[in-house]
Length: 118
Image 1 (tube, rainbow, N blue to C red):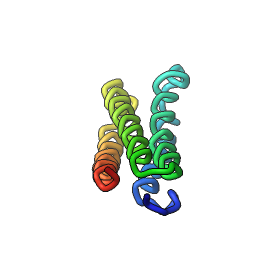
Image 2 (image 1 turned 90 degrees about the vertical axis):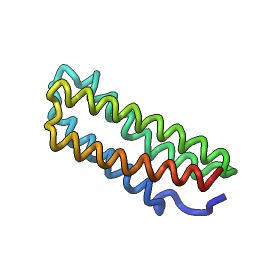
Image 3 (image 1 turned 30 degrees about the horizontal axis):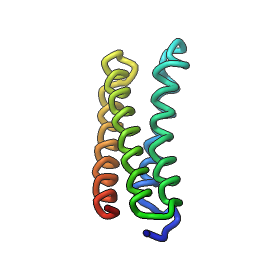
Image 4 (image 1 turned 90 degrees about the horizontal axis):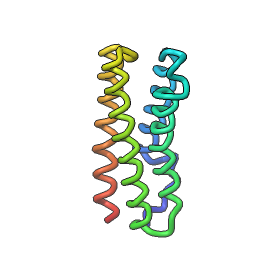
């Protein structure tokens, strides 16, 4: 088992920055999306670092790996929601591209970390 505080994990740090970015960009979404897409994107974004943190506190690498897969699933949800937001013109193209780059980088990190654990 990797004995490391989750705050030191680079993938956790990157996913926290992504969550902060999502909160910032969704502030500008239409008010009628407050309980819709805004809420969905924020929950998915928070779920990524949350699952990394929770998994890091489990008893085995296998359990941790399972939480990394859940984080990957949340990241896929967020990616879908960001694409929808872009199509609905809630996100400017450059903002959407920046978020996508962050998500692709985190996805690669999660995949590599998962492989290391299993």
